Length: 179
Image (cartoon, rainbow, N blue to C red; front, side, top):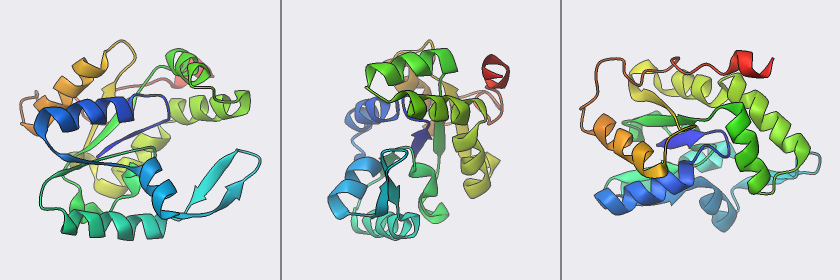
């Protein structure tokens, strides 16, 4: 599982990782769009409201159907059922860098502000820890790392080749950089 605020590098890293280790990749945004797993359109935020219950059910079905390990990536990946998750990698990025990345992706000013605040407040990390427990959650700061470097860190995590606590949740703190 690879989750995080939009712009932290989830999809790029997941694509690299799935090629490197031959895991099947499921991108949440693509799945939601393809299978219409949304309830409505939020005009103010210009985004679909995802039916997280249907998303959970569908992810569980996919996990049972596919006879290989999965990489699930996306902003809402941390809503996957606990029983199919062995590792939840939360990618993080400093708000200044995140702003640059989101501008480059064409995000609107209000959406950039919301995502920067979410990143500063550790929203994805908090939800991941709440859903899976600290022992399954790992946090990686992507601010000054290439996608390949982040992929190699994830490989080390999956192989158990990190120092105890090296990528434990709560080590990255961007709160003061925003407020």
